[in-house]
Length: 63
Image (cartoon, rainbow, N blue to C red; front, side, top):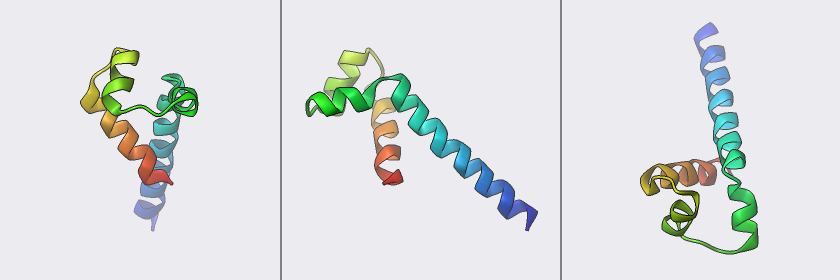
């Protein structure tokens, strides 16, 4: 029972971290202004495309 509660807390933390990271990168504002590919976003943010793609995949999974 305790293991399940701990796992649920970890999942909650991870969800929050994904959203916070996206907010820190200003992804929501960028995507609200115009459509962009992960590659375009990565270039604009000067970050790794593969890492950004993983972040975007996590955001989609949260829907």
